[in-house]
Image (tube, rainbow, N blue to C red; front, side):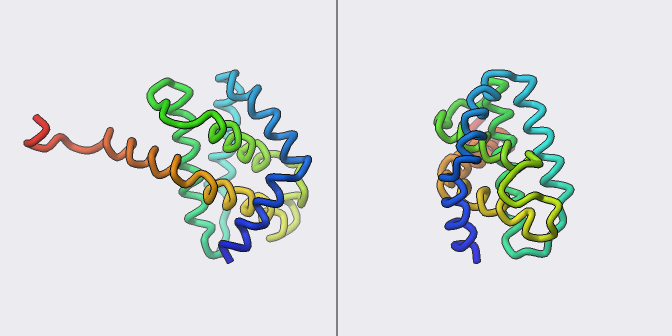
Length: 149
């Protein structure tokens, strides 16, 4: 099932509509207020979505991690991420929050499947960036040990 979602997401990532969102992502990354709005809207949409689809919770958690990554990048505390990952990830978030996509979100189940597929593809393609950020987050919140004092 997850591999099917990733393949659908790959196809969506090559669609002209997604390319429009990718183009908008570059402009959004350069405007902190717009970026904050996109991150807030994506986060709200992720936490409000209830689904029994297998893997949805995992995708949701990883995309929430990506939102934290972009916030950390925007405030300057985390820079160990490629520009391509940021651009593609923000493009995925723009597609996700947009009411205009290939399958409108108001169509039950199918409406979110294209969004979920695109997110699954992004997660698969950029897993290393997300894993590195999570390790960085854990390092920042870890309690100092006697050996590190």
